[in-house]
Length: 165
Image 1 (cartoon, one colour):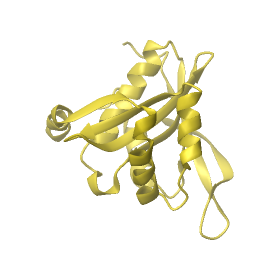
Image 2: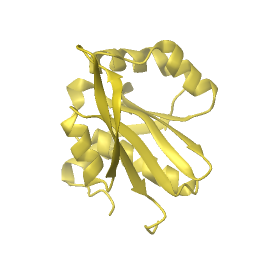
Image 3: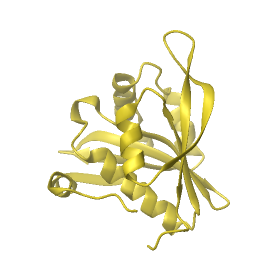
């Protein structure tokens, strides 16, 4: 099942530009990450992901970075490491469009499966992923830092080998 686009998302795709992330983008990406998460990735993690060649993208609107994503691929498997939209611009279809790009890229790279983890409490992201054909395959206990202790991650998979391009 492919993600479905509505009219808002179609007009949004015209207003946004997707391009590969560059080192010069890290400060803007880091600023979004820090606004979006209580336990953000560090500048070093972003730089390392770019350095080792993970697939990384930014979405720009009016020449300002508004979203980004990282994915790696190994031996027929792809893994979404981070997908984030500026908190002020959520619920406008940006994440769905970015996720669709990642899914298409994983297929083009001949990945058979696409994995990701999502915080158990992140209901909006979980709903997006499920609407795009991801299925729950397990729980990673105590995976994410939380204000008190740690939070579980829901592990999701999308089978790419079952779909036509």
